[in-house]
Length: 431
Image (cartoon, rainbow, N blue to C red; front, side):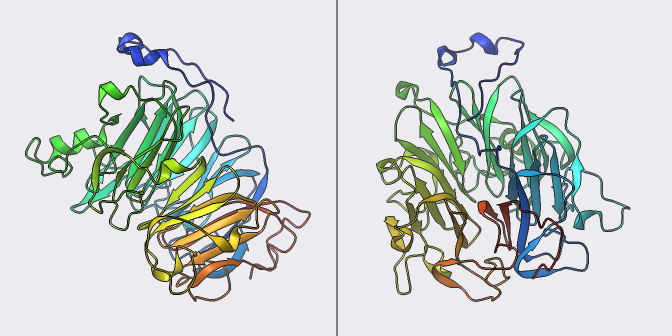
């Protein structure tokens, strides 16, 4: 649990609204006290595996040689982010649009190997999307780099365009948690407010109408409208609700916000397969109470393109959304899940961590076992094969044999695993 952090804020924002009287004492950030080693599997054609320029794909977990102790990991669309014990950020993978946050031009193979991002203070959380990365500092500032994209192409990260080096993306607020979708970032402040920025086309920002969600909206054509979308602003809530939030999660095209001291979950974004737990399959552009997700007490919600996997406080795993490629883990012949379904094959196990890729799902048990299911086309499940899996399947490999997994993150076509270290920290036989 993160400690309460204070930072002086200039201007009139301190007394702008009465909502500022609500203060979160702590927030449920990913634990960074366990030290681990990084393993990767799947596609590595642009360096997202961090195994050097000669390794373009792995079908089983392979150990990444790093000179740092890693405590958290994030898989972006085609890049990988690692948080070290010292609060430093390492990145590797595609840097065409600045997602690595460091200069790689003119440096041979610099994208294929881990490099440090220069940041002004200790980092306590990282997040990553298709072409961007964000870092939360211990003093409540957030720096981001890369770009957002929409159906028209590159949006930039700011009105100036792509940010290839860390840029302080939100000011005059103390942020205590961040979350990234494919092309949007969600911020939770210490006063329980939620801010968003990025692409709004599927409703994932929760603060603009469908008409205003495109850069070509009538109320601000072109760069003016892009600037509004790229500037972090509060989500739209009826003042009469007087809501404050104490947790956030971002899916590929959607957002989940937990109401403080309640099980209520408000959602917005793409819901074409009911992945937000709403009955209507239209995109939802404003925060809407999800009765399905509000039924349970969640530790973690992860959402891919068209499905969501959620972990409750009892260590049980649930799925909702699209069935194709086996991503729900409900077995062969299952239907699309319009309501949240318990994954029965994991029912007798205590699960500590879950994650979704675009069409993949993973679960980590308290004993350190890793289970995967869904699309295996690029080896991102780590089974050694490229077959899809309809049910959670134990991932076995030499690199996992004497290690306990405690966290997993899946991107577009690759997966990153964090496991407790052992005496064998050399690269060794990375099959």
